[in-house]
Length: 131
Length: 131
DNA sequence: GTTTGCTTCTGTAGTCGCTACAGGATCTAT
DNA sequence: ATAGATCCTGTAGCGACTACAGAAGCAAAC
Image (cartoon, rainbow over all chains, first blue to last red; front, side, top):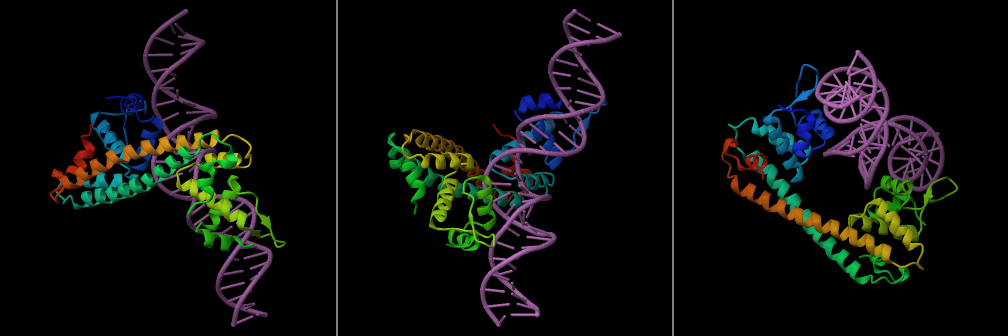
């Protein structure tokens, strides 16, 4: 049993974000103490961790909700979960390859600029005369 | 000399985005025809291309504004431009390494889920019992 | 017992980079 | 003259937070 502040410190998730997650429906409506304050148990900490981890993996909140819905019906096939993960995987792979191209271009840009004048600057030049 | 619609088609940038860029100060206030409509020349198309390319490289609009300000003072050293590009480069590199970790984890998750039941599903499990 | 200061509450507004209208004006083509 | 395309401004919406304002409660020092 802990307050929202404790959960926040423990998880590293801002208080406002925890409340936002409740509003957004990825955390259940929190139990309240008689004074109206939210109280959380271990289960809540686990669910918050689940949400955070999914977010870090790039899942959007709609996908997180979908995964949570699956979790609550353990008799179903996990095809849907695996489909979500596959979709996520190809999104990540395409971001990776795009980012690799960008990194190479930025490296070239930085290397080409050895503190000359802006008029000779390859950084700006690279952005201006592209393709 | 062209209309905003033509510039939009030519550049592949939405009309609304072009107007937004003007509002955001990364495109100059457009020249207007007597009827009040925006008209653009080659120079504007070039600047729009600059902005788009910088955005695709992950520069935020504030950085784009900074790069444009540099561009207008060609007598300065290009250290500032190169600093911006270096910052951008390390941001991209850290995103890359994070994404690589995520990709591996997602691959493991997908491989581990061979359409069993949710109760055995490694996708959800991987998100729940992490670290 | 009161004052200080911390935590929490709700509700609303701001962020970034667009995107999508609504409602009106104006252009072009038939 | 009329239809449909294009343009204008202004405002609101998106996602995933983040940041406040103003009120209430709580714990501890004085």
